[in-house]
Each structure stands twice: as C-alpha cells, then as structure tokens.
Image 1: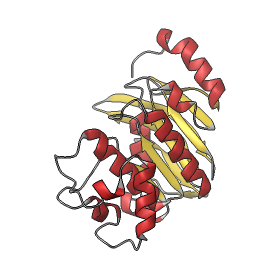
Image 2: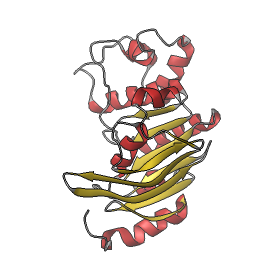
Image 3: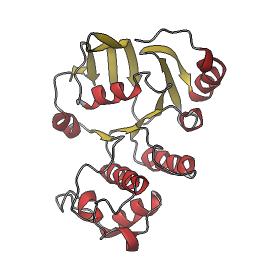
Length: 234
C-alpha cells in the first residue's frame, strides 16, 4: 500500500499542496481529478520522487520512502509515464522499450504493447525516437514502455494529453492490461470522462483534497461543482 500523509508543497513561498492524504491499495485503479493548476502533476512528481514535499511523508508498506530517489523508488516497483514523453532520443523505439536491450523482453510482448497503444510493430519498432515522431506517437511509445515494465504502481500523468479522440478507448485498454497483472494505476487527469474509467477517485482543487470516493460519485460531484469552485488559489 502506498500513502501520502499530510503532504504539503511550497514553491516560491506559494503553497501548492495543502495537507494531502491519499491511499493507493494494491490492484486498484485510481484517478486524481481536478482542473489545470490544481496540483495534480505535483502529486505525481512527489510520488515518483522527482519533487520532495515541504512537509509530510510518502509511505510504502509502512515504511517511509520520502527521502528515496526516483531510481530507488523504481526498484520498489513505482514507475511513471511522464506528461512530457520520450525521455531519450536517437535510439529505436524497440531499444527505448527494452532500455537498449537491458530488459530481456520477448518480441511478441513488444508487439503486443505497441499494438495495444495503437502503433504497428512493423512500422514503429525500428523507427527512431526523434522529431519525426509526433507528440501523440511519442506519448504512445512512453505508455508502451510502462506497460512492458508491469510495475507494482503505475503513475500516468495526463496520459490522454497529445492524443486524438481515441484516447478514451486507449486508456481503457491500458487499465485492463494493468489489471491483468495486478498493477495499481494512479491516473492524473482533468477530464472527468477519463477519471470515470478508474475504480476510485480523488478530486483536488487549488491544492486541496475536496472529495474522494468511487469514481462515478466523484465525477458526478466534479461535473456539478467544478465550474463554481470556491476554493482560493494557492
């Protein structure tokens, strides 16, 4: 079980997160829903270890991992598909997915995940990750790399950004794939129709946790209240 306990984050003397408490249990899909600027991606980066909270703790199976690096957390099974995709350039898509051959992955597994994210193995496996790939294609490659890892916790930061109108179907396929392997999904989004695909949701606004519950309940609340949110900025 992965938890955020009383997490706060300040940036340039401005409070971005206010005493955030969240729990992510094994094998369940979660969404963190909220408008742009609510602090959703900050939570994702804190979970992954890219940012350190100003106060509070990140707890994994009862142990404090707040001080652990991205690499150390990855070894514990926490991985992330970043909002800005394709971290490495100048290598083939296949090498990107297998970390240059370090991951011993069968060819049919690579084909499966590429097809799952909507990329033909024949057309993309040997293409280079460079500017010839569109933003949407790069995003799909990033998602495929996370699928191959089958981590214990998969953090998806705005997985539908840069994608076309088929994004909802893609997200559903990804959730189903991870469910097969018992992966806990933590999905960051400002689209309620994407959040509705998950089991459980947290709604945050202006850095505050406003509501939590089953996704259909939280999404209904979000639709009714978000546009007239009374929480102040910061």
